[in-house]
Image 1 (cartoon, rainbow, N blue to C red):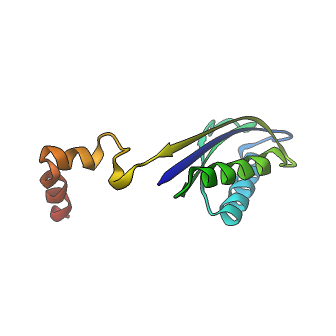
Image 2 (image 1 turned 30 degrees about the horizontal axis):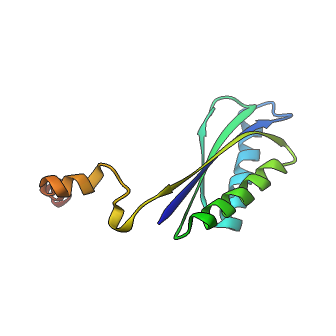
Length: 125
């Protein structure tokens, strides 16, 4: 399994308020979520009405597919009428069979005998 992560930084031209920014960001997010079946969220510069940083994530069984989808999303970001793409970064993270690519988390707890701690907390709810 592969997780592709894209971070796009946008300068929102003509924005005079956070409301203007939200309109541009929401439009971009809705477009890429529906068209490419990805997850997207504004992740930084939340109070700056002229700058937005958006994280986009896709999961696939092929790294090339993740890269292709994220390249298309970046293409959409570069063609926004109300924003300028100022930066982008992409990372593809492999997760091996059974989560072997993951360091720590529940897999480490299962190996150390602490899994019962997680189960007890879930049972208490």
